[in-house]
Image (tube, one colour):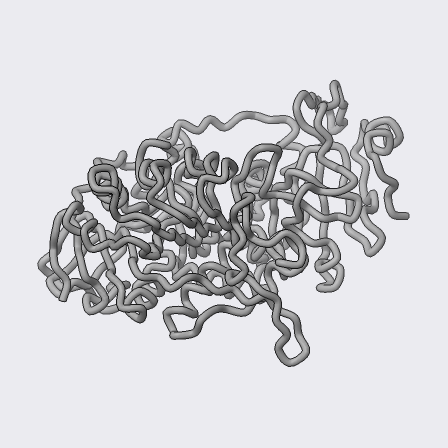
Length: 503
């Protein structure tokens, strides 16, 4: 039977050596007060210590002094297993200092491994991850020098087919953020941007005789409608009521509390950008890339658009009338709306459906998308892509590996080089005013996020769209498919590459 208690009382339920699974998505839906209660307890007593933390999409609030950052920094955590570290500003730096074990697994594979554990199965099989950095025969999932857990991922063969087997430590504590608890302890997510892996995390925790702790905005007297009760009260041990901060009214557009027709998506995107202090820059390079990449869309396509340069595709799809004819998706479970970005990445404007995250990755892993548009840090002569690890910096693979592993058409959107690149466009002609000092097309990528060899085996159509040309993946490497008007092929392309192109 659940109990209503304070955050500090709930923190007492967590023991040394527990494995805590957090249901959040990058920077959204974090149970902040629960994390800060754990910090208060650890800071004053030294317990709970030697924790393992698991999260499909990572957890953080873009503030190194809030959420879990403080107790991780002070040493409460021995092991961290996440799909993405982007919103964890302090933690992602400590990872590279060998302060604790840290592992980066594809977001969808963590989600599926949690669901497997909920069903009493030790782990989950997947073809996602083969021939990229997480494959133990390449680098493995360990991020730093002290991370050598061989139990998380191992290659297996089932009926003659090769898979990776993902297995997580047994989850003993669930930390969840929901909207409301009814008199039966049922938890609804009506005002949340997503429900993520909430149900699977709770089921796995109870299967392991652990504790489920849920932070909610309020208690309600009327029982939830059965379909709205994402977590049944019988799975809940502790409910902590924390009155939410007053949100500006524009954020209601992300909860699905009112209908937003496609014609109003752009308006709400601008409103959300202003609320998150994000300024849309008229970037010539990104505009050229986004406009060209959008030409790959077809009516009825089911689509995923990555962050960064690919975000421009939404604007050009609206301009050419395609936005109303395609279905956009986002990793957290949203389908049929327009993805938000920045601090609220993972939410959708005008979503038609928001379901469990593991179900979204079922769609991605089985090739259910028609096309995806992804960013890239590096591309090598084979066509391999590094999207997760830069020099001295680590964000993580997130859902990238799942999204690109089986999607029939994969479009990478990136500038030809970086740091100083200056480009002009006039009357449809592109001029390179100054080359950047950091090449993005290299002999070998630092780490493999996307395997060209695997894509060729899968029969995927892969393009690399830049501000001056388009490359296509072939069995022999990159082939120059298109040169934009105004670009000198020899000077602006071939002379800038350190490797020959495929014929």
